[in-house]
Amino acid sequence: MLPEQRDILWSFLTLAFTVFALYVFINVVRHCREREDVNGKFWGSIFGGFLVVMFLEAIHMFSLNQAEQMSFFFGKMVLTIFVLLLAWGIFFKSNSVEDQSPPIIRAFFWWTTVSVLLAGYSNWLPQQRSDPPPKATELVGEVTMEEYAEMGRVIIFGTEQIAGQKAIGKGQCPLCHTFDAGDNIGRCPNLFGVGQRGATRVKEERYMTSPVKVNDKEPGSGIIKGDPSQIPEEYRRPGAGGHDSMIAEDYIRESMMCPTCYVVKGYGKAGDTKSPMPTINKPPISLSPIEVNAVIAYLQSYNEPGDYSKVTVPLPTPGDGDEEETASDDGEAPIFVTGSESIDVIVNTLGCPLCHTIPGIEGAMGELGPKLHEKINAPMRIKDPRYKGKATNTKEYVRESILNPSAYLVMNEEENEVYPDGLMPQDFKHKLSVDAIDKLVDFISQTEG
Ligand code: HEC
Ligand code: HEC
Image (cartoon, rainbow, N blue to C red):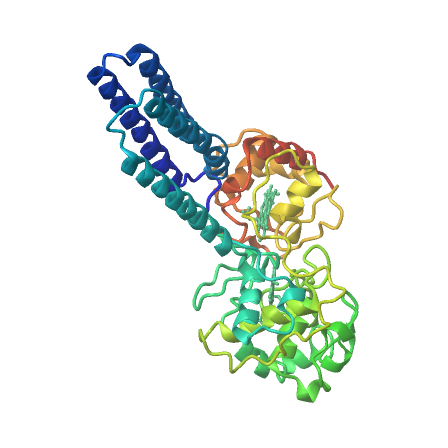
């Protein structure tokens, strides 16, 4: 549920209560009119007062967001109604009004109870739906493959999605990759069908020799290429043999843990000898063995929903998750930065370092986009005859690059072509508050090599 969304139920109950207060007021006034001996002014102003309070509370209710509405309802409104009912009862008793209407009161009590229960229930439902996925330790022992693949889906896409934003989970894969057949945005392979092509790819000549040979160590990750039996033990496939026995699972795992072991043609740097993909089991993404396998289970099964026969990873067994920091704590809430965070946190939360090398941010060595040396780059971009954007100075240029990346496409000097449009996410404007964008622009505008 969106944080600013209002709950129809609370608004409805508020209105219903206000109408009820009006009913009580009219009821009391009517009784006072019928009976001479009752102090009409006194009782009238008491119940008129209640009506005004209810009315003001109703107005206030509409200025709150959903979570606040709930606590306001239970904190203040229920109390007001309770006191109102009490006063009503006293009115009947003290004036021994004959035709008091106990059925109405009883009905009202019954109705309040039911609606409060209903409210509690319906409020609990959406929270259930957006609950964090089961933690790795809780998963262990009783999961089905369907649930395990679902865990993988959540690691890739997250649990919550806001209209207009690409859904992105802890694994960050959709920042770069597409997943639907035929959806190719540019510089990262579409992962549709990677299970099938992985199995045959490991036998291809290009895989055998480039950019490192099978059985050689890839220096960046320290992993021996094409030998699943040499993968670090926590991540290793049980029963894995050497290169001859490699299956699709091994290829996908190697792609994640050692992106430069093999570089898909046309998607690498330096003549396809270096992968721009971050190593998934190392910071900042740092997926655990259980998480890596969950992602593989998802990739092996999502082509054919409901069919898990192609999944080869084992389900996690008791003990697997014991010392782990447990899966998927992060990336659950929709990504949003308010501007009160430090610049490191802002940049890392948004995932800029996965694609950009950013001086001043530790570990920001991404290579899919240009190095952010904007103090020098920005003035050059604005002077470029190809530049058709609106910026007239560095800060404006940086702001435009973040909020509307397609306004100008930077030239990739190494490849001698412009960077592909649509690779830099287009939806940062939904993830940043005004303060956060100011802070980010100030910082990025100062960067230099
Ligand atoms: C910063 C961008 C980026 C992110 C984030 C990223 N990848 Fe990649 N990935 C790439 C690029 C570029 C390639 C192609 C170069 C290569 O082969 O390494 C690639 C290749 C792959 C391949 C091999 C594809 C093939 O067709 O053989 C797999 C599998 C893969 N990525 C899985 C993942 C998964 C799973 C995640 C998330 C946990 C992920 N990637 C996150 C950029 C990224
Ligand atoms: C998925 C990869 C990716 C991510 C994530 C990403 N960018 Fe980019 N960025 C690119 C690419 C590719 C370009 C070049 C194409 C273009 O100009 O739009 C680019 C261009 C830019 C430029 C213009 C650079 C220049 O020298 O003219 C700026 C500034 C920038 N990005 C900032 C950011 C910031 C800040 C973030 C994080 C909030 C970010 N980017 C996240 C891929 C990415």
